[in-house]
Length: 78
Image (cartoon, rainbow, N blue to C red; front, side):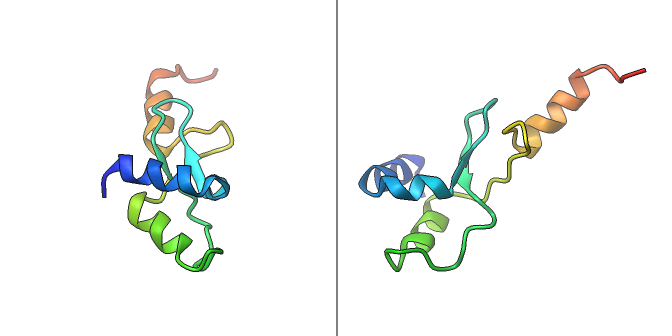
């Protein structure tokens, strides 16, 4: 699905944003991997899974790709 359709869906149901992660570096959005199978309204989780990919973020709010890029750019600690 198109990212725009996902944004439109979130505008219609703003309370569902609680199930969306966004990387602070690349701004990629995706649903939280721990999202339950069923969310009210009944098809909400199915629709979020249709519009977005799973996106885990770390404690800094970085996705896996950005975390790996940061690790490559950061000099090792001595």
